Length: 200
Image (cartoon, rainbow, N blue to C red):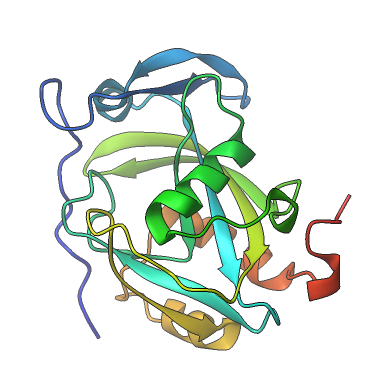
């Protein structure tokens, strides 16, 4: 099995990552904005939102490997196409935007679950520094073409839930730690295709 990639240090002021992102409080409320580099450096609470992309029949999920140039979790695998929430942006809007940016998928908004499929507040650590993030995970069904954003996605493929869980059982398989906290909910809350976009 492949070994986890070497952890990259979070960015510092003056390095890539200078865009402004939303800052949250520990309870999950928007509380301002700061440069991404400062958020990672100082361990500030922020938010991230992503979409679990399922095939139209719900039998497979799209898994991808992050590029080695990502600011955090470089080279690791994930099953959410997502990113950090921008100031004034709702998490669902972030999830839809990131799905289009990372995978080239722009489904009708009705195809994306109106409420998060799963959420978690992760008070963790990355590269020996605090990493605090509220994560919101949504779901969409899709059978069309996928186009990777080459700066963010190195490779991707469809797997069944069982195939993904089998790889996750290997502790040496590099999978992003925040999504790992959500994986049980993500893979047990799959909606029937006819319920897509209608969940209350």
